[in-house]
Amino acid sequence: MNPSFQRRDVLRVAAAGAAVLCGAARAQTPGWPTKPVTMIVPFPAGGGTDAFARPLSGQFTKIAGQTLVIDNRGGAGGTLGASIAAKAPADGYTLFMGAVHHAIAPSVYPKLDYDIEKDFVPLMLLANVPQVVVINPKRVQANTIQEFIALVKRNPGKFNYGSAGSGTSHHLAGELFKLQTGTFITHIPYRGAGPALSDLISGNVDLMFDGLGSSSQHIKSGRIKALMVAGSKRNPAFPDVPCAAEVGLPDYTVTTWYGLWAPKNTPADAQARAVDDMKKALATDELKTIWAQNGSEIPTLTMAAYGGFVSSEIKRWATVVKASGAKLE
Image: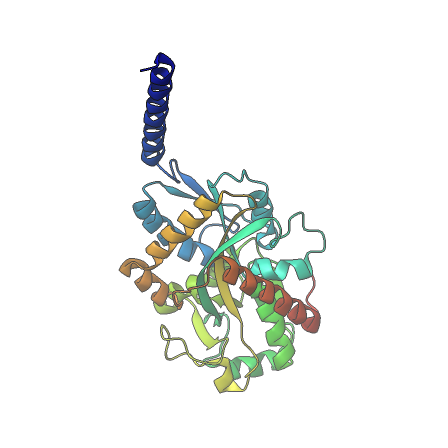
């Protein structure tokens, strides 16, 4: 046999062997995540976002095999944390858990340094809960929403409500309520729902328009009282609390939803794996129970469908902001 042919055969075999070895090495290389993942939550600890983020972190950690670290970055109605997340490295190891507030922000913050649609990749909707009108029963002497409305009309400007910050759904829910009931209640913005809720419980503010996710345990304990669910039906977690449609406010519908994004240009495989592992976490009995207790169903919107939902919410809230005349304070 010609030696040159022998050499070529040897080279072909060696090359084929190298390809097989490289393929095996690639197959054995662990995929995302290979280290802890940080999830930026743009509100202080103790608010509605945390009520879902903390248990979600625990289940995701079990499923993904790496810790999901919660990084609370509150301030400016959730926009400070969003700005930090938008500028984070797009390597798959920073996720962002935002909320309905980030669909409202473009209408009330004229100079945001990020764009929720252009600077992020939409991953999935995580929870969707109705808002509820809750009062401090020691400060507000009302047993029903009708009694509360009558009380406020007799005392315009006497009562105040806390919110997670100017431009948040808590703020807009309050402005809508005032608009539709012909009442005047003073708005007091906080750096997140957690601090506002703490002041409601301690008696420093009179009421809140809060998500059930953060209020539910305090309603059950009796520290605060729920007067109305903002929507067209009662919530299964609180069947005795009437909905807005039942008390003559059929157009008063406000929900607080929470969703997951990643910085723009995050690798596609990390996006897909994050969505898959989050879906597995939401399918666990533990999270199903917690979501139900917090008044939320398990959502199904992911990727492009979730992005379309966010776009529709931005348009919807722009209309609400204009109609209510809400302004930054």
